[in-house]
Amino acid sequence: MDETDPGDFRERVTRSYERQQFMRTLGAELTRVEHAMVEIEMPFNPKLTQQHGFLHAGVISAALDAACGYAAYTVIDPEASILTIEFKVNLMSPGRGDRFLFRGEITKPGSTIIVADGRAYALSNGPAKLIASMSGSMMVIRGREDVTG
Amino acid sequence: MDETDPGDFRERVTRSYERQQFMRTLGAELTRVEHAMVEIEMPFNPKLTQQHGFLHAGVISAALDAACGYAAYTVIDPEASILTIEFKVNLMSPGRGDRFLFRGEITKPGSTIIVADGRAYALSNGPAKLIASMSGSMMVIRGREDVTG
Amino acid sequence: MDETDPGDFRERVTRSYERQQFMRTLGAELTRVEHAMVEIEMPFNPKLTQQHGFLHAGVISAALDAACGYAAYTVIDPEASILTIEFKVNLMSPGRGDRFLFRGEITKPGSTIIVADGRAYALSNGPAKLIASMSGSMMVIRGREDVTG
Amino acid sequence: MDETDPGDFRERVTRSYERQQFMRTLGAELTRVEHAMVEIEMPFNPKLTQQHGFLHAGVISAALDAACGYAAYTVIDPEASILTIEFKVNLMSPGRGDRFLFRGEITKPGSTIIVADGRAYALSNGPAKLIASMSGSMMVIRGREDVTG
Image (cartoon, rainbow over all chains, first blue to last red; front, top):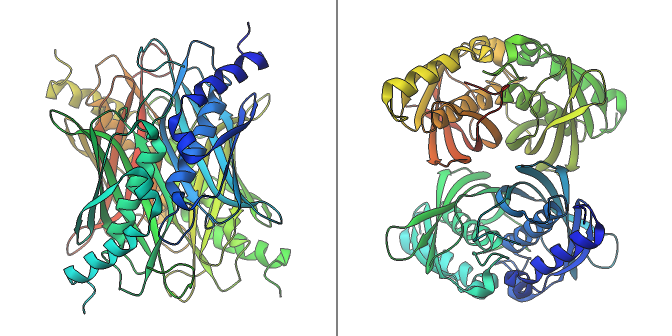
């Protein structure tokens, strides 16, 4: 099966995502998996807030990192895995909303380093509001027993 | 009371931290508050892991952001508040350990922008292991009703 | 004259750009100024290279920072000025090419903080090649005598 | 000769630095090479300024990137080379001064990825002033003909 076969990467991403216990803790669901693009959504939850009652920057980072990381999974071969090297997050508006959408997209695929960009949106009545962006570098991992899938 | 009065900033930081519901969700405790430096600690918890069983990068980011943000609180006047503009996280080693320590320190104070750096360590038997670093910019907020304390 | 009047911001950007002596040192020209978007171009020059003969990451950063900063100038009022708070650059491919194009675009305007994203391309025969991206935060400055225009 | 032999890495760093034509264009000199730490210095020069007459952020980035990159060279084996994956720069104070000092230090060595941190200082009469910091990721390159030394 070819590495860009949709069924193949969707299944791999879904299976790996289900092992991310922290995404379950956040109530974050994988809602879209395309070649080089993944979306995650979550409802607002007071347990995920910082001191002013907004969604915590760490929650935004976690969901954006997962969206970017799984976008990277869709462009690698099935035996490889992904580890995040680094990311930067710009917080543009307070994390206020009924729901949140996190989209990760591949800016530059690669055999060792993959560059991904993400955007986070607050969803309420009215148009989606951009609340944060991420730019990150992911490393393609092969042959490490503690880093598979 | 002067802005660098230890009792004053410690009390303000502690009170604000207690309103960060996400820190409670993570099981993260404020363990040290000094002028320009704050430490947070948390035990390992499988609910906070990514797909390989390591502490999720988003958890590391959340605790480092809180440590850096509260370090910023210790150098501002009591009426002001702090919002994170942006941060970058470098993930250096897998988040594996019994406990984790997150230290935030002020690199450059300022009346509008404060630059902070953070380091995350995994603690087990043996020496602490550096697992991540953060560099972030915080904005000092005054006179906004939705951003106080 | 209204702040988004094309003539007005184009003239302000051009006048400020001409005072950037470092852009002249790089041989970098302002080639496009639109609302929220600026492009800069430069030819390859061996004087701007690193040890492997590629365009130096610092040159790429300088031109991307200028493109992002001037994109910010196009969305502020005429009396204000811009200082870069921080930026992150991802270097995706070696800086090899006949010419280079640097585009800065505003992701989030604001009265105090403006977030901009930039992309750098190498131009030779064939399609433009993405070599780097920038994400940066700019501060809107008013009333500081050493930071005008 | 062992990879941490001082003479060996000093010679390699110096030889590679001399091939960085852009450092010569900037008037930047390698002033200190230690294991895991490199310093570069340059005098103020109006040709390197932005629109307000301060040292351009791109010049600061170039020198910090070189200092961090060569700090990485001191911890790799002699046959390997270094490429910068990404860096983030925080600009804390205007680049005003008679001379500037750029120090790069290794935060985390590694066989594939090396994390380095840098600091830039303005030097005039009086104490050195911190003007910028960098945090960057470098990749260790082996066996690529276009990336040697």
